[in-house]
Image (cartoon, rainbow, N blue to C red; front, top):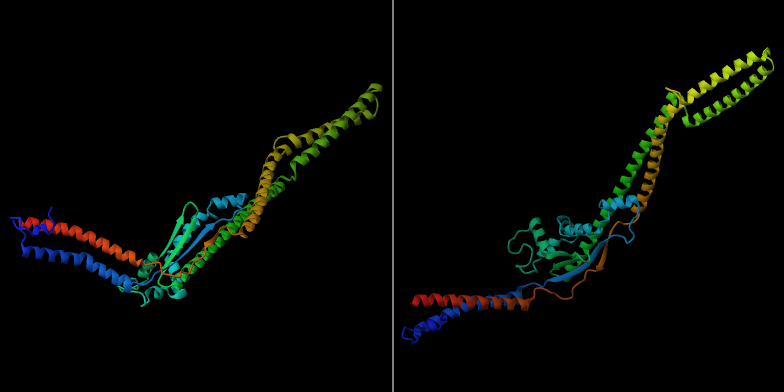
Length: 385
């Protein structure tokens, strides 16, 4: 393909002076528009207009205490979300870029004025070109100048703040860290309250169950006229054993007397005593192992109620232990924000990178000029034919 210079040749191969001059003028105008003028404007902007941008950087990590709880309640609460430092790190990230954080910054030192000062060039300051000074516009502007990134391997977060003075960059970074620490403390306090409230509810529930179980045992004793069926059965069996011993002794005595003489006046009395002892043994045995209201039947229901009462008492004791553990857990932080690198107060402006910006404009202009020159030459060549 011919370039603009070769396109200025006549059909017999000899150049036309007028055509050559026109082609050179076209090239100069194209170079001026695509390279010279943009480069000149970039030199003026980066050299005379663009405001210095200072960058303050800090690093922090949200972490849990090294000593984790090994109690059942502690493990339950940790598994339910209390002390998940990584999740809370993301919560801190969201908070830093949120409306709430921006509102507090606006209240503390008028961040809209810090970013919208007339000393900042019109292309960079807040509300410069579009004149939109609403809070939503400020939030979008703020989120472009404040960033927080996390290293998933180390869980270290990097907070970067861009501002137009060194002091503003430092102040915004420091304030955001302080607000993040307060947020973590609030989450800690909420976790403490949830832990104690959960444990207190468990104690109240266990107390209610223990009271109901004890009341059921008491009612059963009153209704059945029995205090301890097992203990009373043992006493009844001891009484039956004594009656049986007496019965054996009486029968032996009766046999001895009858063997000596059958007309002894003691014999009728001994026989009545034997019958009485047998009746007593039958009655007392029926109280222990008979049908209906015997102690053995009462003991089944009583032992069930007693077992429920004992289980409720153990639950109550465990609930009190859990409450004490929850109070101890609440005394220490579940997680905390630890600063790894304090916010720096930059001595020099890092941005804009003026020389890089000028060279980038020049390089892009040259590329555009080359492409458009080839296109223009092609069009002219086609037209000349």
